[in-house]
Image 1 (tube, helix red, strand yellow):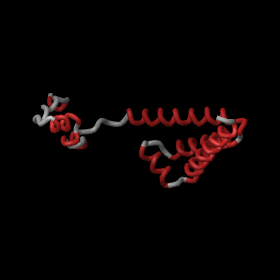
Image 2 (spheres, helix red, strand yellow; image 1 turned 90 degrees about the vertical axis):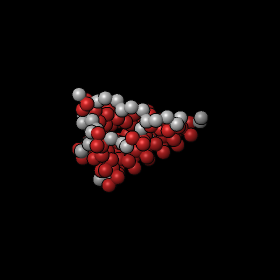
Image 3 (cartoon, rainbow, N blue to C red; image 1 turned 30 degrees about the horizontal axis):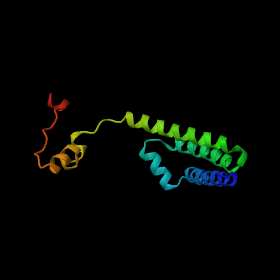
Image 4 (cartoon, helix red, strand yellow; image 1 turned 90 degrees about the horizontal axis):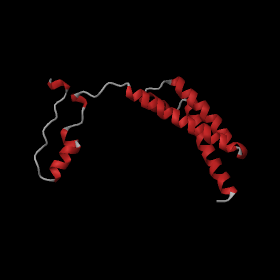
Length: 127
């Protein structure tokens, strides 16, 4: 790939990062809902938006593109880690919140082969 093509892809990536940063910093409903859904508050949204802004600006400048890519990759890994950390602290689903039996993998296999429903596994509530 020629250098011009690489710079064009770099600039497009920078523009996307700048657009996401502006949406995060401006408090767009979509961004607010996404951060609230994963349990990260407005302070993390503003921090991520400002880091995205720096990464987007460095991606737009051809000589600093590698730095911008590293910053954006680090932000992505940090956000994924924060999301997984938050999800790990959530309480397990109760039986009332579990999906219906018709949607379980074992039930779908049993229907496919014409077998009866597989027996329910004993859980902590059965003890």
